[in-house]
Length: 237
Image 1 (cartoon, rainbow, N blue to C red):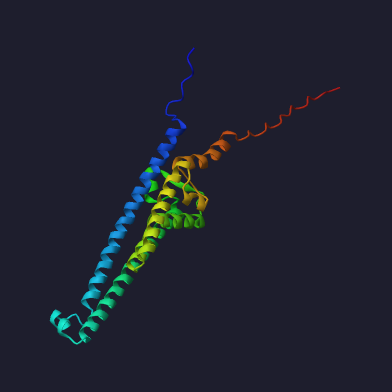
Image 2 (image 1 turned 90 degrees about the vertical axis):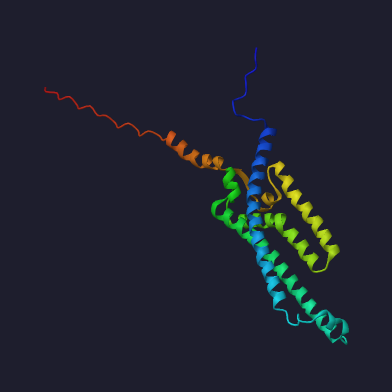
């Protein structure tokens, strides 16, 4: 006697988990590619700011001979110019990382709050549930911290001169990124658990919405039959 075969198209639980993680990985790659495009644009803008600050710096007409043979005034002036330029560079870089983090947050929050899914999730047919602005904001915040926020903080510490702290911040950023990513194998990432959301296939949500309507249409009770009255026969004595 042969055992009954499994229904076609039904994958084992392990295979379904791998497919789900792969779909989420593709969605994340698309979203992160968009963030990288924004980072390139912000980097170009920051580079222009640094170039303009260098061009507008006063006292750059000092020659090396003036600095070497000067009585110290030229050297002090050159040091002040260099310090001022470096502070402007640090400020521009920090502002660039802040703009990148804010752009990432606004992208995730707006798309999740309005459509329930980012562009990457829309491509692979995923969405979050439940979809509320507060849950979307919480999920976008954790996603931003894991993707670019912690790395941006480490880079800001580095350009500010805090080398040791930047190394620890960088290690923490790497650990948090992989902890959030590997948690997807459990079905919910850290961002999902912090926001109280779940990533599900878009078709599943569509079926859940249409199921009550179909069920109510299928089990609509029939109208009760109208009572029938037979005319009374006339009797003549």
